[in-house]
Image (cartoon, rainbow, N blue to C red):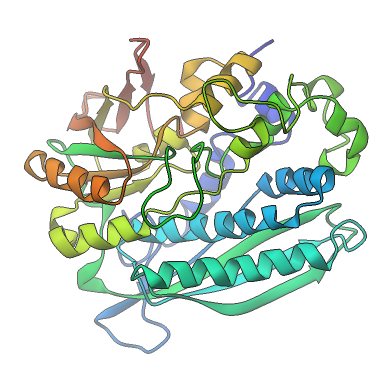
Length: 407
């Protein structure tokens, strides 16, 4: 089986762009805001006009992970699975906001687009109640986040099942901004595990670490033909038949090396690092936390878009969680592409001085989240030091090199 995630290969054949280079080509020409090198766009405080404050508005969602919940519900009758999808949608916004220093004063709005013939009220109830319950959980751990309503649209002509998206708006003191443009040579990179046993603030057990990226590929590479035949509404009919649900598993099959089933692994709710980052910023301040990178779209190459003339070296990576090993084995994807699509074990990176790295690890450990120094930054030698590049060394010892932003 050929590799799935080259932009000219299986990934693109499913109608997905691994690097989103066409999106960046459009967005990068727009105004970059008050802090052009920050992880999110920050604007003047248009809400109150206070010159000491800034605003950030961010939109994201659960992506095609909602289709996995749909399959689980249709197979088992358990609509509570959509509570995890509600969390995914929130966290994909929240953890991007963390990367500019937002840990409170956040207002969320949700949009659910559904085909009412396939997605009834019991599913909507779990999504809506799951959203409110997760926001309440965040507030109980000091993260001031609230629901501001939303929209549920019955759009059967647009979607055969459902999409679950969120938008977050926050107000932040300009003096509190974590500006990723400050990522420079000479820093330690601390990685926070994407999976493992539940953190002290999480409800539930083992988390696979899958997050909410790459689920189109993961779903089709792991799950078997049964789902294409029984639930044709969960696939694009224009995609070649040999790329659709071409894996060996059903949702209830055991995932090798894990206490989870394949379905439980793919549906593990995306972990938020909000309580951890809240404590980090209180203890170290935005001055000593030089950058925070959420390894979402672009996965381990996300860092390439931040800092200037930086060589990112990640040569002490965490063990690869079983779900990613199984995806790679089923798909035949090479390590270079796996690390560009999936987080592969850590989903948040903290950039700090070498002297502060131990303290960052200790804070994460206090929440029950595995953390370690996974690498460092040096001066870039790419094109005479005129661009960022990344050298990544997985456990195999192979050196994976990525040359520039979006590469």
